[in-house]
Length: 180
Image (tube, rainbow, N blue to C red; front, side, top):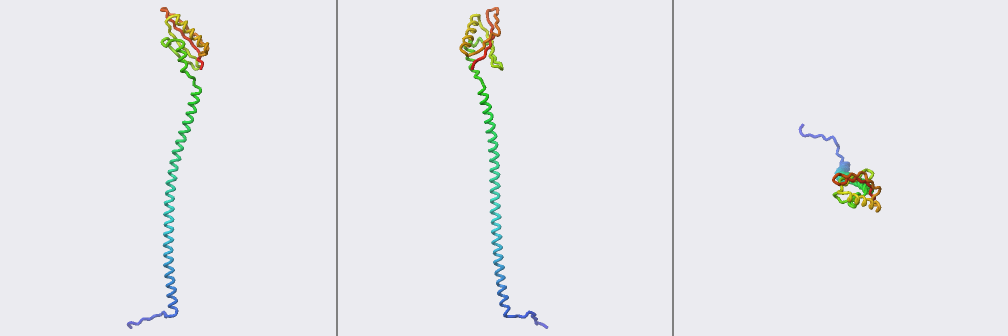
């Protein structure tokens, strides 16, 4: 029993050509399907990569804008603070009196060396202590104060104290309200 082969499938020549054409068609269809699947996979991968890059770029831009907003809000806070402080300073300057003019009034009252004390209280009254060499200088000071009151450089002058020492020197304390 050597070389005998038994073929149980009948060969039908007429149907064999038809199967081979179907088989060929299926093979071509499977290759086209595989190629299509590959192209679709490349397109999906490319779209994913593109969207990923765009998302990262947008995230980076968002972070940059957030930092810029924080910086701008800090600057805006400083600007508002400065505006508020400038407003307060302007109110203080508007309410401030030009106290420098008081010194010119004092120089009109007596010479600089005669003044021993100068003070201004919360009501704006100026009190000054003078040490004068004689009664004549005291009369000149009082005359100057009365003249300045007449010129409306000061108002309500008062002599608070007057002391004549043994050596002829005079200690005089006067007060007045300067007119600004």
